[in-house]
Image 1 (spheres, rainbow, N blue to C red):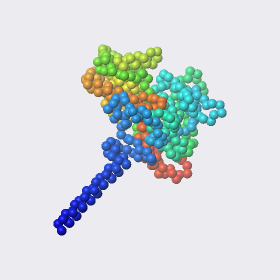
Image 2: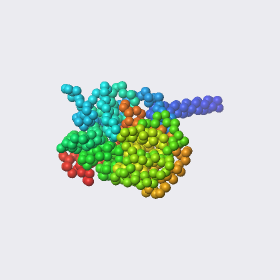
Image 3: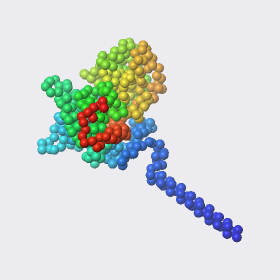
Image 4: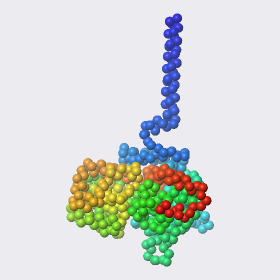
Length: 475
C-alpha cells in the first residue's frame, strides 16, 4: 500500500513539473511572437496608427550616435525604402509647374500631361547663394516624388499616396520661399507682383478643393520657410500646418509651436569633414561675422559689437556671402571654439546651422528662438544659451565663455559631431538626415492634428456649407 502511494505522488509531481515547463515555454514564445519582449527591453513609447507604429522617443540614430559617432548601422546602409513601413502617408496635390519646378525653368515635354519632372532621369537644379538656405520645399518635394521608386535606396519616413482618404496629411508643393526670392527681387518691375499673384492663386485653388473642405485645411501642410514668404496668404490659410524657420513674423493665432513645425535652414558653409581640430587647435575663442546693424530685435548685435570688439581672441566683424564671404566664414568657424548666433531681423538665422556643421559650439542669444526637433533633441548638450538682458551686461558674456572648461567644451564638440547629420539635406535622403527628421517632426504632430480635426468636425460634419467667417483666425 505505501509503495502504491509513493508511486502516485511521483506521477503527480512529474505531471505538475511538465505542465509548469510547458506554460513557461508557451509564455516565452508568445512574448517573442508579439514583439513584447523587445518592447520591454527597449522601453520605448509608441503611438499606433492604422497599420503603422511610430516612435515618439528620440530617433534611433541619436542613441546609435551616442555609441558610434558619425556611423550608421550596416543594416541601414543597405535598407531600401519600404512604403508599407513609412510613418506618414502623404497626399500631394498635382499643382501646375508654375508653383514649383517651373520656377527652376523646367517645363513639361510637349504633349505631356505630367506636371512633374522625371527625376529618375534628371533633377532640375536649385538656385545657389542665399536661396539655398530656404530650399526645404525642394528637398521635401523630391523626397515624396521618389518615395514610390522601386529601387530607391535608404529609408523613407513619408510615402506618397494617390488617394487623399488614405493620407495622414495633404502636402502643398508650392515653392513659396523661392517665389519670394525670385519674384520680389527682380530687376525689371512689373505691374503685377508675381509672388503675390501666385499666393492668391494658391489660396483660391486650395479653398476650392474637396480635401480642404473636408478638413477646413487642418490636415494640410504648407511650406513657408522664408520669413517673408506667404505674407499675403498666411492669414487665409491659418488652419493648416506651416513648415517654418521661426515664428518671428506670425501672430500666435496663425502659427505656433503646438500645430506647426520648425525646421532647420540649409547651412551655407562647408561641413567640417573628419574634424580632429579640438580645443587647442581652434585659436579663436568666439566668432561672429555677418550684418551688425539690423532692425527689430537685431539691435543687440550693435551692443555686443562694442562690448567685444577689443577682446584679443574674439572675431566680431561685418561680413556677407559676396566675394569670398562663405570661404572666409568657413575658415573662421572651423578655427573657432564658440560661434555667436544672435537674433537679427527674426529670432533665427542660418548662422546656427553653419556653426553646427563647423562643430563650433553655438552661443545662442535669441530669447524668442524656436529650434528644430527640440521635443526630442536637448540643445543644451551642445549649445550655450544666454538671455538678452545678460548678454549686454559689461563683461558678462566674455566671462561666461572663458569660464567654460576644456572638458565641458570637448563634450559639446563631440556631441555636435554626433548630431550634425540631422541638419544635412540629401537626395536621396538618408537615415535621420534633415529630410527624414522633418517628416518625423510632422508625424509627431499627428495626435494634435487629429484632436483639432475631430473637434472641428463636431459641428462641421452635418453643415451644408461653410461660411467665409469660419476661416477667420479670430474665431
